[in-house]
Image (cartoon, rainbow, N blue to C red; front, side, top):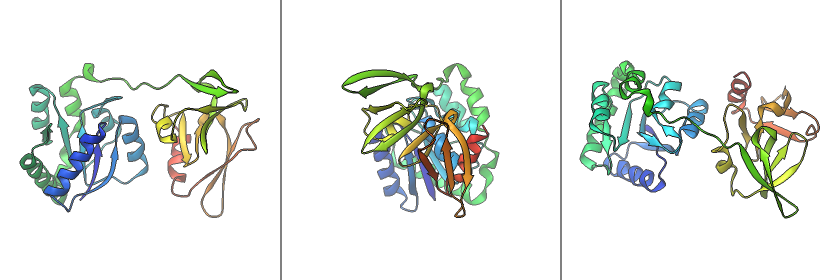
Length: 257
């Protein structure tokens, strides 16, 4: 079975993956994501896994928000330290749960149950929305995104509104470029870190080097190899962005939001 882990603590995620490998080597961890936002992005661009291990409380909200957005058919095993009311809700909705720290025997039983559900496809009756309702909407933490970034220009710090940023660029260092073509160095090691902080409805990870603002897009041209060529609005029109054919469908869907 192919598994997705949703856990915001790296050590906990690593320990869970190690435990899964020990309990059932046939379960392959294909991806570990650490937030509601990255989970939403991953599920939007990848096929549904066979099973999901999801922490309940993540840094940017509760994981139930993920399953409000996506109607998944795969079984979900929640890892949680929630109160008995939440645990009872899991049981009523037929979803397994594991209390932290994870017990190997419980993990083995949970995986065995999930494997049975995968084979029989009886898990299609699971209703994540009922689980969310049972827990009550007041427990949900709204998603929040950065409103400003500090950029370095000529040894001076300049606050820039996120709405003024046309794209983020990885070119040895990480840069942000405004709609007026002003370029600032950012003190982030990777674009992945920046991607965690911005609204995915407004910004799209076009490739390894670039994250683009939807308001900066002028036009998109299809190429013969099914890739896309993205042209930005002036004065950034000379900067070329190429989107792979694998990402082209999700990019088109993003443009239509």
